[in-house]
Structure formats: structure tokens, C-alpha cells
Image (cartoon, rainbow, N blue to C red; front, side):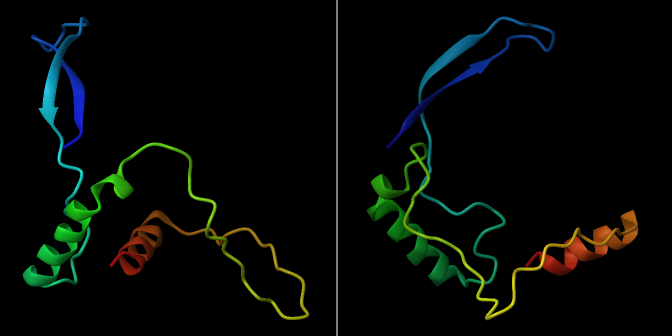
Length: 100
């Protein structure tokens, strides 16, 4: 299991660092916002795959060059327009609409 160092202050205003070594860090799990549409059995299966192939999911390193995103516009050139301006209320509604 990966290990990381974390520095904790003894007091709120303490600017010095006190390293804490060898804390277990569980990187092979879903975050709270992930897998919301999975039932508990499916979540357990995903976590099992993450643990089985933990070395593949280790953080760091360069981004993978294997996937490229393209939008086929046919014979038309790509359109570049600035985003529509929205009021803060409408922005919040849009964020809620787009998040799953």
C-alpha cells in the first residue's frame, strides 16, 4: 500500500512542520462523489478491481498519450464562440443540471 508523509502543526498558529511518517493511504477506493449510480455490490466490485490493479492507478507520472478527443464537423470548419454570459443564479442552476 502506498505511503505518504503529512506535516501537522501542533498549534493553529504554528508555522513549523512536524512530519508524520508511514501513514497508510488508501488510493484504491471511490471518492464520495464517484459511483453514485452504482448499487453497493457494483461499488464493491469496482473497488476490488482498483485494489487488484492498484499499480496502474498510482498517482503521478505523465498523462497518458493514448486517447485523443476529436469532434467530426464534416465539411464545416470548427466553430469557436465565447461561452454565453449567465447570471450567478443561472450559473448555479447550470452546474446542478450538468452534475450527475
